[in-house]
Length: 229
Ligand code: CA
Image 1 (cartoon, helix red, strand yellow):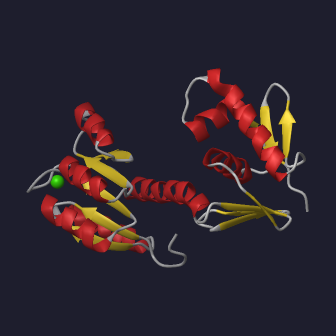
Image 2 (cartoon, protein in one colour):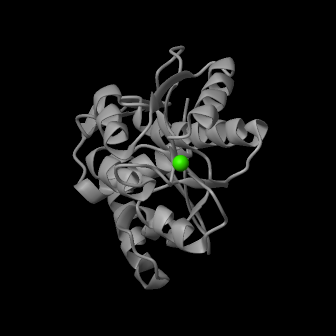
């Protein structure tokens, strides 16, 4: 992510006393805080400043926080913590539908708010981190993610797109047994387990091209990538 740079939070809240108090607390936590006081200004600030996360009040002048969230998410996905005046189930459901990640009902404690913001950023760091390195190196296996090329012991293997995705998936958790159903769901996007033979045949392809010793079969369960050093 940003390394040591301060995480940038866009805080959208029209009640100035609340906005000032929340901003002060977030700054004390080490965040850089930008403020917007109405819907249109929030959308504009999100576009211009590209914050790492947004704390967004639902009740706003201009247009409300739900509309702000909808417009912002349509342009660039960004984690959103929504603030609402009451425990309104409709707001909650609509908020989640337009892309809010979490919810906090007023009145909230500052401790609760900062805990939620930290959790939100941790979750984002987790989901974006695997995409960060360009090359995965595991023993004599080298996977270039940007160019989608694979070498083992210096020799290039020509994989199909699905074989490549499957290999990257296994390489993301080396030595861990991944169930066939899970691979099917994650790599192919299939929810039901009727296609596990598809997984088997692609594993066969990977072994043929990269060596039989690379992937271990755990009978009745799934597969694990073995790393040789
Ligand atoms: Ca408000």
